[in-house]
Each structure stands twice: as structure tokens, then as C-alpha cells.
Length: 465
Image (cartoon, rainbow, N blue to C red; front, side, top):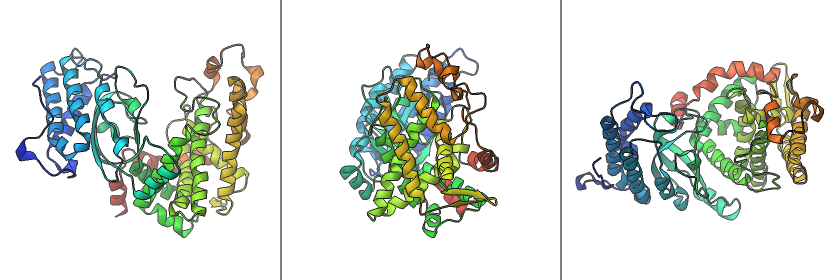
């Protein structure tokens, strides 16, 4: 391949900060990436003997176009100059090595968005990666994003919720891997020869989270006849307000994975555990964000109340009916929150209408958080299997297990002489089926949930107009 340096011809220089997606090189880059993606195998390599595969020279020309487009766009993003230089070298090496399994470790290490968090700052990101909750294959993807880092959030992070790796981000444009349910940009999804000792950033697309939340919540409120306080109804109708709620929620959630009395690796890396353990961990982090939001509201922070109801509604309405039923740990957490609030008479489904006791909701939601925290604290002194059964007992207190479950019958129904990880095989794919309430809601919301695939803020604003 021809060596290409990442610098734009003088006549194409335009001021840094101009919108990347308005430059003619962006559609060129996007088209070249979309051309390459179908040629790739699941591991990101290109098998030139496969049916429909191009010649190697054709693939090289497509990669040349990607590098050339990055070269033209790089001057708009001087803060990413080191990354874009490394990216060109990684792309070139991938082609020169015959398009084997890609290795973009050098460019991954050069990309450091958390070091310069500034509200509205653009980044052009190109990597071979899978998109979590989207495309499971490591395809080449390109995404243009902006940082969400307003002064009030930066101050909270600096003084209260230290999270130096967290990046709140929004979409400008993206390739097909993000035309999905994916709302994250995580370094661990990128194809590399070896994982770095530690990752130095993680991005959450709070605009997609907000747009998805708004569409599903509006539909759910209408279906269930739920009467909302005026300020919450106004929040649901305001994309920017919801986006700010989600970036605060996500920042606190993210840091909670490494805070508290943790009886196990909080990220459960390379650990095989029953899916309700993942569900409880994700719910714990969300309820911690809720608890902190209650404190912020009491202190006069306007975002505190918004975060509370973003957590409640997203967890109760969207999570339980999104995705399939195979070990759906986020769905489980949503079901558990609803069932807990229902058992404690905070939510009532009567006369085909949902009612919420807005006064007691914060107290009782925090009570569930405390029960999970107590489980974790006690778990430090328990063997793994005993802890798993204690967690099962907590969940099954509020959610009915599948009638065919062996775990529901207790330790005597399982061969406890096996290593704990082997007993995970005895967990049913849908260990805690949907209640009749959620089965009905799932059918009603099926089309709405499907419509949120690939959603952006522009989509929901256009629909509202």
C-alpha cells in the first residue's frame, strides 16, 4: 500500500472545531468502512477465498480511502492527532499483513478521550470492534461523537463522584454497527493482540439512552394510564433535560461498580456466575445512582429528581420487556424493582391503571438498595455457592422462579460436590419468567421497543415535530 501521512493538503485546511460530518471526507470514510464490513469474518479478518470476497487489491484500495479520509479530517481534531497517526499505521499494517485478525492496540492506546473532557469536543473514532448490545462481530466501525461534560457535571465529578475514566458522549453519525441497540463505546470491544493492563476510558451515549427512554416511557405512561407530576411530564418531553439526567446517572452508576462492600470482582471478568448475580450488580449500581439523586434533590440540585424518575421508569418499563428472555439480567433487575415497589404498595395496578405513590417511592426504592447492599456485605464472609443461594433467595422473595427450576428447590436438588461454575449449567435460560403484567405490557410495547433500534436524538425530535 502507498504510505499516507495523516495531514491534509493545504487547500483543504479548515478551522479546528468545524463539524466533522459536514466535511466531504466524512461520507467518503463512511462509505469505505461500509464497503469493508461485509467482507469481514466474525474475528475481523477477511477471507479472500470466501464467496463474495473481493480481491486483496480491492480491499487495499478501500483501506486507502479510509486512511485518506482520516488524513483530511484529522486537522479538525488536533486533540486526537496522535490517535489518528496511530490509526493510519494500524490500518496500513492490517492490509500489509493480508487482512488477518486485526490488531489496533497501538491506536487504542493512543486514543485518550478521558484526558481532555470538554463539553462539545468532537472525536472521530475508527476501530475494528463489536458493538455491545449491537453487532457481536469485530467489524470496522466509524463514529463521530461529541463529549457531554457541562460545568455542573464536571464539578460533581471533581468534588463528589470521582470517575476520571468516564466519558459522556453523543452521536453525530455512525456506521452500521451502531444502527443497533448499542449505546456504549468501550475499549474492551476493540480487536487487539493483547488487552492493556487497564483501560483508561469508557463512553456512554447518553443521547441515545435519553431518546430511547423518552419513547418507551411516553408509550408506557399512555398505555398504563399513569398520571405524572407536571415536572416529570415536562422532563420526559425535553431531550436535553433527559440527556443530562442520563449522563449523571451513568457517571454514578459506572463508578459504583468499584465502590461498596464487594464480595466479588465487581465487573465479574472471566467469572462464570448465575445471571441473577449480574442482574443484582447492575441494579445495585442503578439504585446507588437513585439514592445519590435523592440526596442531590434534597440539596436543591435540579438534576436529582430527574435522575430518580429516569431510573424508575427505564427500569420498570423498558428493561423488563427489552431483549430476549435468555438470561436477561437487566430485564431481571427491572422486574425485581417493580415487584418490590408493588409488594410495598408504592405501585398499584388496579382497574387497568397504574398508580404510583410519589411520596413514598424514594424511601422504598432506597430500601431495596439497602437490602442488596446488606446481601453484599454479608457475602464477603460466605463461600461463593452460599452467596449465590442467598442472592437467589432475595430475588425469589419478590419474583416467582420457573416451576421447573432446580435452583428453586434448594441445595438438595443440586449436586453441590461440583464446582460452583458447573452448577451455573443448571440455571434455566428464563429462570424468572415475566409476570402476567409484563407479558401483557411486552405485547403492547413490542413495536415501540423495536422502533428504538438505532434511535438518535434527531429521530425523536423529528417524530415529535
